[in-house]
Image 1: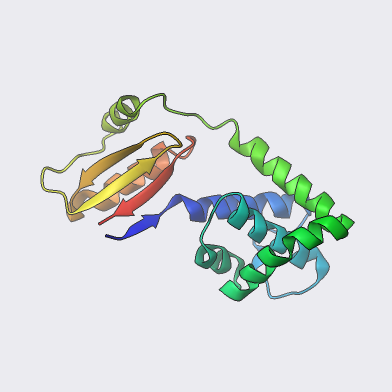
Image 2: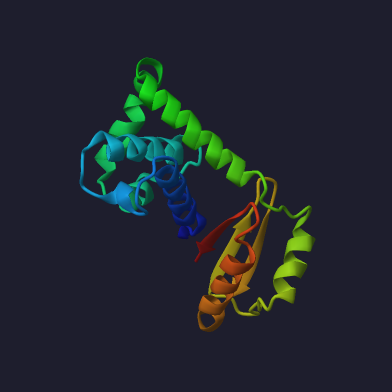
Length: 175
């Protein structure tokens, strides 16, 4: 069974966008090869937040930041000493962290699985009687599984991503 998280990449991109706005950098500049402090500091902080706070896999973080996994390991390992002994790092870390948590709070939530299932059915998600793949939508308390076949998978996935972008949940593919 393969489980792929589809929302981590979007959360990582959102985090990068927040950091570039706070640091007055161009969009996408955190993935440039520059080692200058104006790029390296927010890049490090984004990687640490993605790993420690959001639990995003090293490969996704490295891919979005155009780095290798070893760099992400290095950023994560140095976080505690950077936070304690480097004022610029600590101040910027707190700014980015607070901005990101403020952004996440207003997201909508479903109260129970049946409410989510009804919402997804109403927007056109089709459940397959002979599933080949599963779209799993997970909240902090429960998850809903959508049975889908290869023919309707792409349409169902796009509908899920669009319909749930303002909700506090994660979308996985399970085979």
